[in-house]
Length: 162
Picture 1 (cartoon, rainbow, N blue to C red):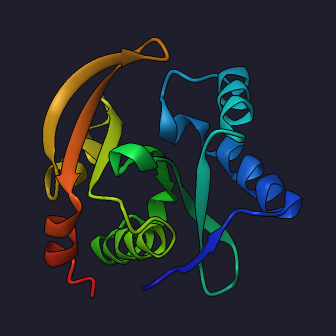
Picture 2 (picture 1 turned 120 degrees about the vertical axis):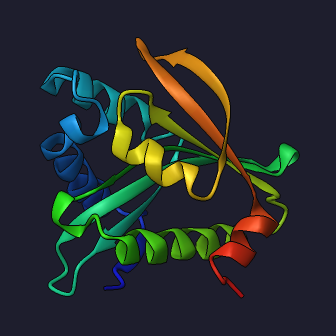
Picture 3 (picture 1 turned 180 degrees about the vertical axis):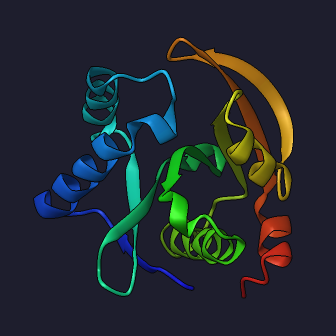
């Protein structure tokens, strides 16, 4: 399945994203309370870009939160959540393809991507290890996070993005 991809730009988009995030806060961090989730999403809305993924019925099924440092040619993927029933290789694979295409269309100078994952989230760490290398372990938001890096040209080749 290939999800429909949208860039958040309207109040309606952000409202839907916020509802989805609140409903899936524990997917982002198992220790997060509702208040933690609300605080996180509200404090990051202005500093990050959001790509949302929708199924054929137009229901929001996932999102990616990222920021770009153009002067460094780097994208940082801070959060990614996909509803559990859609966590198949094809949805993730095509979603990553679509994210990279979107980023390159809007930021041609990007050369590398970094992905953050809660150290205790085995699922996300296993996925990120398939296409990126572990480069750091850091403390953020009161938790341990693994940081993965990937060269964009290598990702383009591996994911067959042309």
